[in-house]
Amino acid sequence: MDIKIYEEKMSKSVDALNGELATIRAGRANPHLLDKFKVDYYGSPTPLQQVANITVPEARMIQIQPWESSLIKEIEKVIMTSELGITPSNDGKVIRLVFPELTEERRKELVKDVKKKGEGAKVAVRNIRRDANDAFKKANKGNEISEDELKELEDKVQKATDKYIAEIDKSVESKSKEILTV
Image (cartoon, rainbow, N blue to C red; front, top):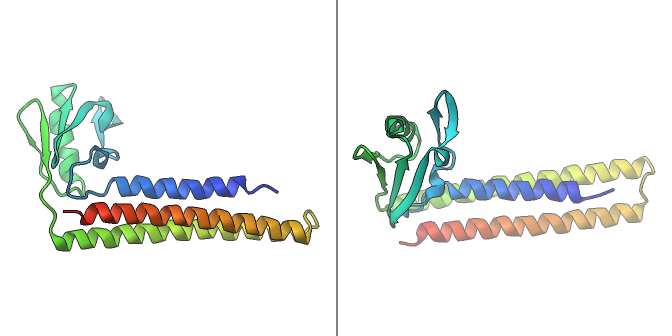
């Protein structure tokens, strides 16, 4: 039996968490906040990065320059209906998103949210460990592997679980620190 498939699933859980954390705004402008945004481009939903140039000219501003000026209204609509909570402004060529300074209260809320997402990722990793152990026990019952192999596999899965949970803790810690830095 191979634990690689379970390690891969655990790794994907960590990657998913990191992707989610990248979209949480921490007072500074981060172009990754716009990663999930799609605009209607000739009838098909297209990622914002594929129809516009996204830059960060200042610490708290994102500038979106669509390659076609006809997209400005569409991009603004997508931003307005999102949960970013920022009103875009445009000059006909460029859309600017100015991020207000976060209040202390809002920072603490964001840190709680980050920790909750971290807990969710840990639960996912632990569920993968449980699935792996169940599969190993089933193989042992079916006499496919010996007791010693079962113990060894369970140990390997536990080590992988510990490793990925440590990665999750590190990601949550660094994002929390980023949010709380004024």
